[in-house]
Image (cartoon, rainbow over all chains, first blue to last red; front, side, top):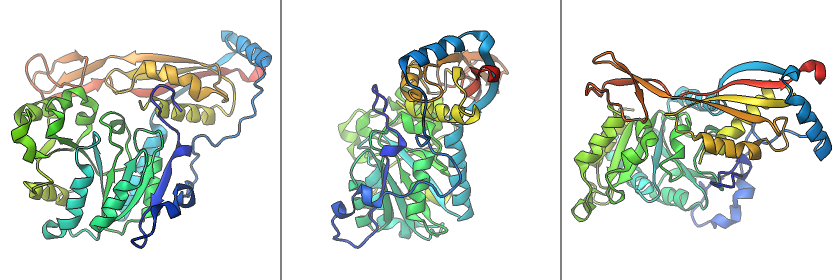
Length: 290
Length: 114
């Protein structure tokens, strides 16, 4: 684990389904009992190789003294992306989803912007507005800890699995692959992936989604795009939530849109209120066009 | 914050590609618009390589400055951030460099010495 930021590794990631009869205590099927096996394919996963290096201080020192002599070194050209492994698995996810006619939408935001509330309302009322005829709406929930959000989604009427990243600060393609295997969305489904609340790290990791949506609430301030440019630069859609609170906060919608478009000229922006339902139809129409 | 995850992926990839040979140097190209912080990767590298064939290796990061091309006036210019604005005032701009995230090469112990 990174001592600076607390980023974790995959061994600490847990995938939990709460798609089971209501009333069952979530603690009964805790993370260890429900953790999905990661491997259903031929890829190597990190942190699973066996190391048998001689760690004796003397030998290490000697070996490295030799290595640092240029004559003993061979240069191997690689030219491989730093994110190659993640991107490869993301492409796997994308192909599988496309093969099953499933639209996956990656929702990213700060904690507390209203991603889960947006999903709850969407699950409850999408059928009234659904022009795309989704076979179901289902959700992969990402959080460092707890299954609270997956339980909320379940109560709203949709199937969900929870990915707990432990110390990790974002979802990556292997985590989403495990979650998809466990959730097994129906062909023709609309699949939401609610990323870990974080406006930095999730922007870099392709998970195989059709579209990236950034959710921001008016209480967070209208200067977020320039503060977190990678996130807003990567977005296909920005949802501005909690517009019912606009009279009480200094959030300038024009300024926000201008900043977003200075980073991402083609980005779509929808201002809505999950709480009072204002402009939710614009969201459903955007979803139907995916 | 995501640098450890990225570096861990690099270590795994290098170990696979070098068949367990001891690695002395890993060369990366990191664009200044990529969203990845070189200093954070340097810090994480020691932790991520501990106990692997890269243990004790040097991480060499070559930064790539951001550049963009304007579709309106054709100008090619340097950019320090992701705000896509040409000096001519146009926002119809394409980033041409600075997003690189590449493992360019590794230096490994020569086979004859293995």
